[in-house]
Image (cartoon, rainbow, N blue to C red; front, side):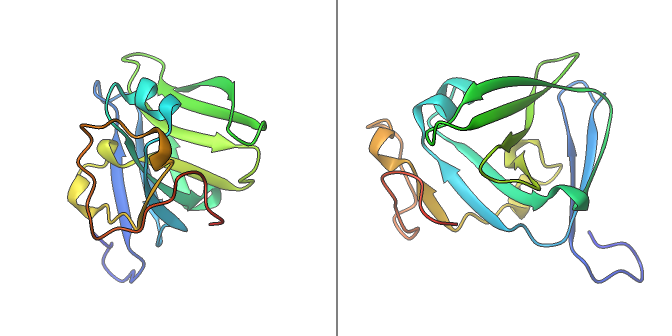
Length: 143
């Protein structure tokens, strides 16, 4: 909900234990459902719904620990988890400088998430029922 006198949209969210909280202001640069195999492993689900915000538009309180891995591009990717409960909250990618990826499942109101596309559909599980209206990309499109 926007603050009084502030027309910029914002989302709030946090982890399972409540030790990490965030406020993300403005409109996401992009919002996708990622079906990449690593995203499946990280979430324990068929995909991860993620929105990208300018890092400068996100205020985080609490400790996020980052796990470094290699992305599909070969560049570094950092997965952010709550240091206490282990909930995945954020991500950063070497190929997306200045952006912070936020897991939509961590929003206080996950209904605020509006994905624009499904990506990495080539690795989607057969049982993953994707929204037929959203555009589909077998890999990572230009965003």
